[in-house]
Image (tube, rainbow, N blue to C red; front, side):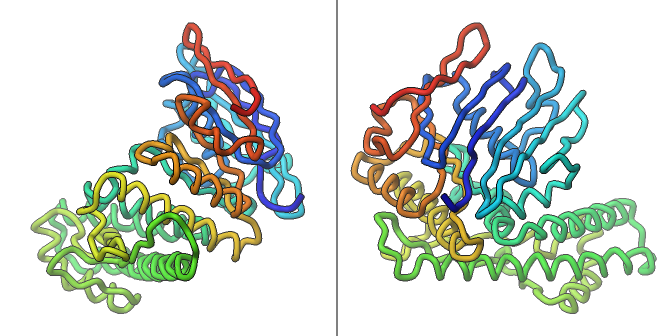
Length: 371
């Protein structure tokens, strides 16, 4: 069987799971259980097999099971296209997490080269009505799914900007202090902007012509109201230099890709996402995740692993069944959570079914039969 999927997952001292083992076969994974039992913790563990801080953006110390606080570990067997990999990631004593692939120490970017992963969690339901920071993070996760190296450009930009902001707060006026930092920001910032534009083009192309039960979204990359968005390295360098007086007054950098926003319009209705109903906003998010998955499948050669936490919220039975059909048509190993097995009845034997229970603060996972 070709594709991208986990064949085993082992958790050790990961949040509420003292130990857990799942044997998987590439089908979608439906996980049910009461609130607080530890379902989302399983999805978070899988997300740690990708670059970054996982779907909760937690620190290594926050993940470690209490009260032991011994550290944590996630180990998985991953089938990626035509190769099998053993992947481990862990942290001890709140240290930054380590990664090992096939027995060799690796950087987090290497995870993105062998596996592509997308997720949708309840906290993202308010994406369209809250601040731009969350939408930028959502956009950059999409970019990262196509280009694992995007994280390095973004990190270079952020580090240089922090140094520049320190100079601004200290009221340093000597232009020589800013030159090298702004050159780094301009170079990295141009890469960040170009990668975002390219990712949005790929998502849009994946939506065009796709027959789906979920609405299409028209996506745009926006500058703050009343401001321009410099895009090239030269334009960014000029903008940083010209903005120094204004930035110094504010004590921070007010121009650049860190100020960009993601705009979305419900295409069929011509209504901005932030003005749509709660159900429509959820459907738009699901549509983007599916489009991202289709685009990745065409480029990477296999559908990404999908992590869909409580995805059935705000979906009626018909649309829920349509989502499951699309996941299976995509050929994705999707990890889905819900409070009861009836939420996954439409999946039937197309998925593996697991139940998570919690007793005295310890989560247990058992495989069950289809509902």
